Amino acid sequence: MEDTLLHIVHDKLKSKFGEDIISAEQAYDFPVYTVSKKKIIEIISFLYNEEELGFRFLTTMCGIQFPDNKGGEFCVMYQLHNMPKNWRIRLKVYTPANDMEYPTLTGIFSTANWMEREAFDFYGFIFKGHPNLIRILNMEDMTYHPMRKEYPLEDGTREDKNDSMFGR
Amino acid sequence: MNEIKTAQKAVAEKDYTTLNLGPTHPATHGIFQNIVKMDGEIIVDAVPTIGYIHRAFEKIAERRPYYQITPLTDRMNYCSSPINNMGWHMTVEKLAGIEIPKRVQYLRVVIMELARIADHIVCNSVIGVDTGALSGFLYVFQQREHIYEIYEEICGARLTTNVGRIGGLERDFSPKCIDKIENFLKNFPAVLKEFESLLMRNRIFMDRTIGVGAITAERALNYGFTGPNLRATGVDYDVRAMNPYSGYQDFDFVVPVGTSGDTYDRFMVRQQEMWESLSIIRQAMDKIKQMPEKVFHADVPEFYLPPKEEVYNNMEALIYHFKIVMGEVEVPKGEVYHSVEGGNGELGFYLVSDGGRTPYRLHFRRPCFIYYQAYTEMIKGAMLSDAILTLSSLNVIAGELDA
Image 1 (cartoon, chains in turn yellow, cyan):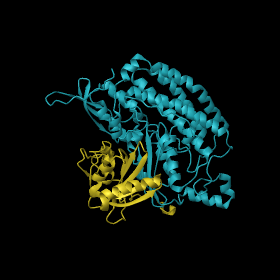
Image 2: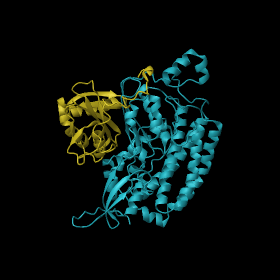
Image 3: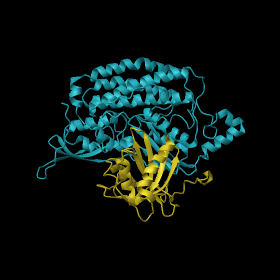
Image 4: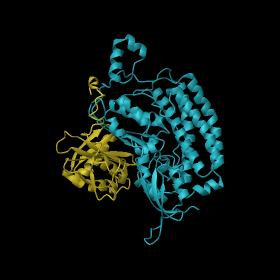
């Protein structure tokens, strides 16, 4: 069923959006679609409203960073769920590091509000049109986005922790 | 009695009281801050602030080998840590393609359902406390203590359990442990029944909870509700039934649903789920008895620590031991999402692996974080005391909220 789901959704998206659907693959039990950023709102509202698809539940979303993927250093992952049919899909939207703006999903899903705030807090994505885009888990006066790969977890200036022998 | 209270509009020229509810307040069961704007005792608006116990688990996880992430998951929903632990193990097992023997799956089901009962006990008895009924709380907490004693037999710990390993459990259930589970199954129904008779048809309790903090199914879905809070609105979404994991497809159980999504329905759904959990544990224990003994982990030497005697006497075991402890285990590249039905809803783990010793990215779908944002909408127009009740009936756990 999962394999056919990949094709059902892909065919519908491809016929409607064409070039904006960049790739489709199966990652374990999830069909994953990479789509272009400028059409993301249209694609998600199409998936929400189309009769057969009806992906009306935003399971989760989060940011990811791939510093070596030039031209697509940052990525936002959305997971949608059609509960009656139990279809679950994942959308991935890449963006270059110098353009962190995304359209907001809060118009479609209320739950996107805090999820987007979290992605902003940790990665610095700017969600255009978000009603209240402020930090959520970190303190207000923090000046950086801590989940980015350039910030190491441990303080680099410490000398009492030498774990080079552990292959790190 | 049954109508849903509607929000009142804030009027500019009116004087409102601003109240700082929290961050530390005895009535909020955790570190939550809500700055509420009040007209008399009616809440007009609320601004929640979260993150007081944020511990950056997602960041820490990017530096830790897979087996060291289990203790982090403990500290999310600390009322039902075993479910979090098992969810994490199953995620890694899915990534690595590890098949788990049926007996181990059932043992895990027993642990997870015990954890669900412990979680629901806390939530439901605290609803009782917030309506002024302390005695029910004391009765059922004794039973929670018995569940914690079972945890002790299984893994040695009580609250942050770190139970199980990637590939199975760290040890088999001892005969004493099985005795304790059987005892619990024998004694708990009477206590639960008594607890129900204290609250379920209690006029004061019903007046305090029916119609309080209600949310419609449509809004709940839009807000990403899962678990008992969603089922109380009438949507029968349960991960155990819809995407069965760990052998849940082999058990008969009912997914209880409510109708109006108010505090009373949430209470009733959790109450009924405890009965279902009891029945699942019973079925699982019966199935385990029919199975060959002493199977408590899969045969995956590259993930599962060998017994200590073998480490000292067997070259291969020593190598595997070293590799696992040093975190040099090879995992495939890829991205995987696995979700389990946690105490509060769909607890998901989104894991991106680049084949390295640590996850490249790990995102927790924490049900509390997702549905707590509806709290403002749910309490607008309600009395302050009802807002406290709504918070405890949503069962927002600070550790899971802030990760």
